[in-house]
Image 1 (cartoon, rainbow, N blue to C red):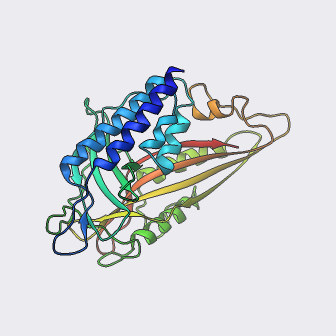
Image 2 (cartoon, rainbow, N blue to C red):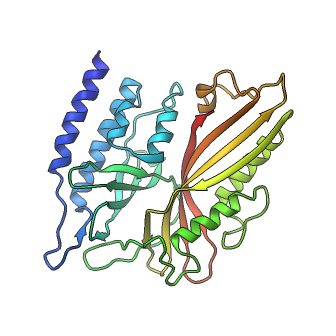
Length: 312
């Protein structure tokens, strides 16, 4: 019964914290900063507290307090693997806060762990004044990757870009994601129009496609989709950083008498211990950070976070 008491106490505590976090109003208009930078530290402290409590009790149940959408789905699946979830020390190193005229509000942060081994570009969102801040995007970037500078406007050190805004760019944020999904959908072919041919994530997915396609006694197909774009910020050169959530379905038709099995320590093994017999689908969520350059440049991925979310 002890884990239940821990979770209940956390829920009560966090509900009180949510009501105490203020938002900034602009005295000259109706817009507001999403959050003040000092309050970002409180958001991350709350996130670490809840996530690490979930690790302590070996249950993903508390995560819904501080995570939402595919971040929650990916982490919940990872908790199914013994030792798959470890405590986090993530904290914000840089914060990008746009202004908004209405909810939902959101902000972006570049966060890293104490040992420097993990570096992420994250988005926290808040649907209303009575809701807690929840993590909705968390692509991981390599330690030496250089992120572009962001455009500022007045006291806002970031400028949100509407999904259909293509000013100064070959593609709007939504069109860029659509083009990227189109390139993924023709794997193992090369990238389509508007997408960098040497994109690292695209190559990673091409390699994974080839491995699954080469399985003996298996007919393999794949399908891709994406959620509508919600979060994008303008770069100082006129381009944009776009957060996208991609959905991938790996479909297997296995020859009678054969089984597709997975190694110990994988989410697939945890969700389907006996493997796939007959017909099966493995579903993945991939969160990517897309760079849309100004002018006619090609879209490319700067970071990603993803994993298996279901085996059917």
